Length: 345
Ligand SMILES: *Cc1c(COP(=O)(O)O)cnc(C)c1O
Image (cartoon, rainbow, N blue to C red):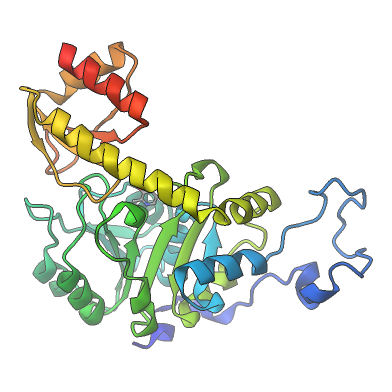
């Protein structure tokens, strides 16, 4: 696909911010006297601006994810990357995006913030993708299709063949948000970026990696798209503390993997306990670290839990989610409290 023709004209024409440090390569970092960026000279480990190219972190992440370093972008959370994507491709009041509700609320917020219309094509009643409807709307002005797999709040992954067909046939950019991929039995689509230059995969350190507080989102795509995103990226969007902490924690992948397996075990246990409750009508199959649960009366159950000090998410107002609660898998103790409380209702 010719990506250049999808990019906004102003973005194509502009050049990115040229930071004081852009001229100097890393190997010189230690030897030089930096009097170029109006920083404080007094060393407290945070007095210098962060590396605007995130070189070290990119090396580590691209190794873990098995992609090239120039196929990676970082954002202040995934949310920043999603916003960059909309701003690279969508001309306000002209171009549109497509989303598949019920899904993550930020796609719509970001589109509307940028004056971009969001065309909604609801999932089918079994939460699968309406492939024909999507492809019917495929046009060069419907610039971006946002897919979330495993999907939030429904918890399911989409069918691999549906996803591949859509990536191949859609005339714009396809974003697959894989925030929950580490909890899934299905494989990431990240390897498909090599042969599909219109595909962007987003992942995050906020969920399975246990670092929602440091705000680090990751985008993976063809070098072409990454270059465009970099062009408009605020240069210092990843702060020094975030980069340092991420590098430290990513060194301990085994701990992250252990925690994922605990969550998966707890998810299974929670399903078996929830199944026994008379007011639980359906527990949807989950590939994520939460369960979507249909109950007799979601408002009532939500408030009863809140009274006992347990906060879940009431998703009743979402399409196809009437009387549904979204329950995050907690620690063993937290889940035991949840089950005990539910049993007492
Ligand atoms: C939690 C979540 C994210 C993560 O966003 P961050 O900004 O990286 O914290 C992204 N997409 C979906 C669908 C999510 O549920």
